[in-house]
Image 1 (cartoon, rainbow, N blue to C red):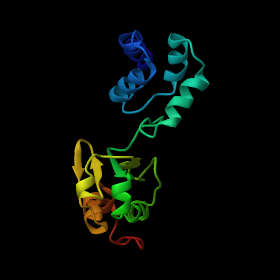
Image 2 (image 1 turned 90 degrees about the vertical axis):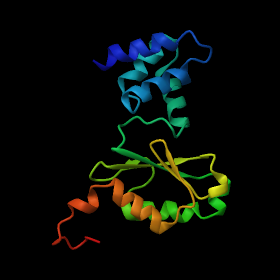
Image 3 (image 1 turned 180 degrees about the horizontal axis):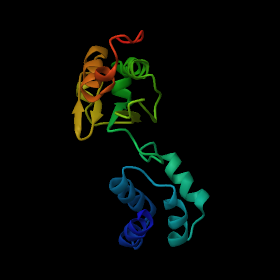
Image 4 (image 1 turned 135 degrees about the vertical axis):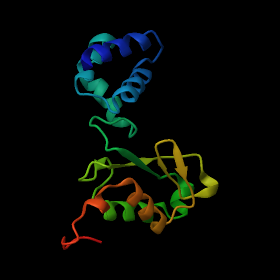
Length: 164
């Protein structure tokens, strides 16, 4: 049951000063997102309101309140990446997947998310999937990467008017 695991994670970290962020990280690491029932439990154990908990979760783009797709595709929005064309990558990914940031592709294979620095500035623009950072990304390379990650390109019927 989710609640029991959430309580276990809270108890493991609640002794820390500023415990909310480490607890949120632990919950998201375990579940892949912050389950809705977490808010009431966090509020109860940390003696805060659910609104305060939600405010912290919604402030940080890293935290998700819904499950992500099979792959989380993060596009760097740091200054170096922006200077080297990350905005065009963002648009290409959004157009190619027909989704916006914090949304998941129809086949549930890719969730698109912004990230504000991948520490790969010398190889900008960069994207990240799982623990792998891809530098010197171009629109073409990004589409190839998306195709490798996505079952969408594979499942399209050859009779589909919208197939690529």
